[in-house]
Image (cartoon, rainbow, N blue to C red):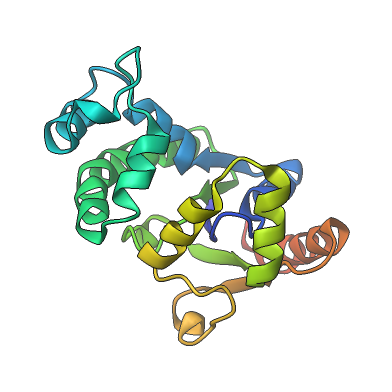
Length: 204
C-alpha cells in the first residue's frame, strides 16, 4: 500500500486533486472532516479547548463555533499553537487508525488530505507528500468567488501560518511533488493523471 499526503493552503486546489485521485481508485482520509468530529460537544478535545479558550466560543447548542475560534487563534500565534497542541494528537491518532484499517483491508492507495501536514509533524505517516500551490491573486479570486470566508480572516490565516504561495525556497527538501495549479481544472487533472501513471501505478 502506498500512502500519499496532499497538502496546500486553502484555495490552492488540494481537495480537487484528492477528488481526481479518488476517481482513479485511491481511498481518502480527510483530516478536516476528522477534525469536525473531534470538536463535538463532550469530547476530550472539546473539554480542553473550552477550558483554555472559554465558553465564549460556543454556539447556542454548546458546540464550538469554529468561525469564532478561527478568528481568535489566527490573530494570536500563541493561541494557535495551544489549539494545535490540543487537537493534533487526537487527529493523528484517528488518522493512524484509518490508515491501519485501509492497510488491513488490502487497499492499494491511500490519500491523506491535510493542509498543514508538514507543520503538524505528520511527514512520517505517509510515503510521499504532494503539495498544491497557486499564485496569491488566483487564490484570492477563488476565495472571493466561493464567498465562504471573510478576507480579513484569510489574511490572518496567511500571516499566522507564514505561508507564501509563490515562495518555493526549500520546498524540494520537504515535498516529493509540487503541483502548480494556476490554469484550468483540465490542466490540473492532466497533471494528476500523469503523476498517478508515473509515481503511483508503478509503486503498487
